[in-house]
Image (cartoon, rainbow, N blue to C red; front, side, top):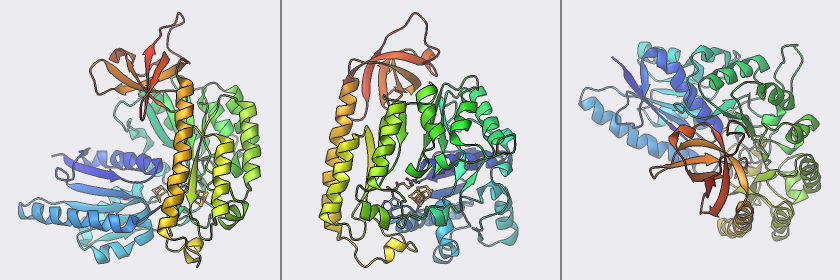
Length: 456
Ligand code: SAH
Ligand code: SF4
Ligand code: F3S
């Protein structure tokens, strides 16, 4: 009989990718995906450790699942409870000690061994914790033959090409939870991309914590680059759009910048976090560049691709941040003009250098700064979206909308666009005239062209 697995995903897109691959490795064991914990025989929390009370949230969720597991046991039903992801990696045995109902704990580097871990759990009769950074290649162990389209017949897909981080920004937990930088070999990435294209995927988002630091080996045996990989991927028939995230300013190489100008499949959208506009704060964060370096880089990127839309990440209230240093972030934002951005209050992460700093900024000061910064960013997003009204943009039709006869797609700038169009256009790129800006999306009207809609 088939068993059911429910994976609850927190955190970044790499976790979304990992969750999909977990269900892939479990499929041969007879596990089907379900969307509630109640219906599941195996519940996996794929956790994130990046900010705020990540660990406490996991324990509170585990508390509820422990009660559910007990209730199911009374009805004679088994439920295996697993903690995966970055909290699993960071907390390890602490979790099974504090929460006896947990059967399995593993990290982002070990989930390809899930079938074996489940078997160990069964044969040992006690909790199994597996958080070693394994030396074997996780991706090679994922049984790529089974790559199913994760989002069931999705038009877009995530593809992790690089993992881990060697940069050690002083605020960040990722180098500890995801380990050292590792790039998948180019041939392996191309193989997975071809399979996705065959399944109907039209847009790939290449993922990595430092995706532009990609150095996977090419078939020649020499290290490749993200620019070269994008060039190869754009030759795959069916793949019409390529995106990547998240990039670090220090790894924005010339060939990648050049690709933005010359490769029409590489979308004119770039998420390039800077975190702060103050040189003193950037140094204390160990970002390895100044505000001016970033601005010069943006100028080069815009010279290569004038249409590019920029996105960023910002942290307010990093330890010791003065009012003037915070103002420097606002200045930088005003200068760059972002199409969209994410911003966060600094959150001390256990074990990271900035968490030890004595000059922590009070919570209310952080909240005040965040509100001001977000107001400026929201205004910029509005301006950017409004400037699209009247333009005809190529929209990739991704899924049905809420209303009958409505579909939702994305513009090259990652804006979500609602349009009235038949479901037969799913997976096509259609010329759409933007008519209005809503709170989180645009609406537009399909404008058929003589040359048809197959490509941009
Ligand atoms: N690798 C990416 C970022 C990964 S984490 C990069 O280097 O740009 C995603 C975002 O979370 C970061 O860009 C940062 O803005 C935010 N972040 C990370 N650690 C944080 C912390 N301790 N407190 C608040 N925000 C944090
Ligand atoms: Fe974290 Fe910095 Fe690495 Fe990004 S570059 S994952 S912020 S340590
Ligand atoms: Fe979170 Fe881990 Fe991603 S900490 S942001 S899930 S790399």
